[in-house]
Image (cartoon, rainbow, N blue to C red; front, side, top):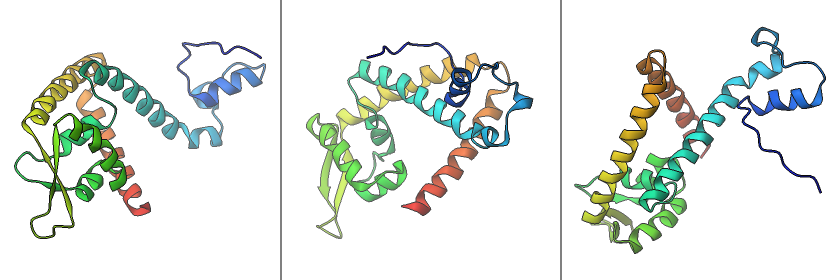
Amino acid sequence: MGTIAQSNDLRPVSKKIQTVTSASPVPSKSAITATEHKTELVSALLSISKSTRALTQLKLQELGFHNGQDELLLALDERVSTSVSKVADALCVRPSTVSKMMDRLVERGMVQRVKGVSDQRQTMVRITPAGLDARSRLLAMREKLEKELVAAFAGDAEAIIQTLDTVAQILRARLMRLR
């Protein structure tokens, strides 16, 4: 059985595979084939997503949280109870996923499940004082990470953020149509 070598090579997987499977060097940007170019944006976004989630997971673990729990706590309105389905829509996940994430937060006393006022069959979610405290710690962690990342940009960070926000809106809209 072979061993897996670790690499610090940050090129997209398609470029790494090309390097391994061919004797020729990795092509320059101008020499990228039409097929490779078609997936360049997707590859970059996937890489950003994976790296961001891995980095935040490490920071969340330091605070005693799992991936997704931060998003759930940040999505809740402290003034009113919110339906599980509205939280799911805000997070672009299924209501069953929200319910599973909530189980751990309910156990920790950070959120409460309550019955709907107009429809007792509807499950609503409310953030507790402990959840508000946790949310403030999560926001502080995110603000620190944001400052670190923005400081690393050589160019206009605001323009990059606006472009990424546009991409996120496009992806969210397409995802909503598919669900």
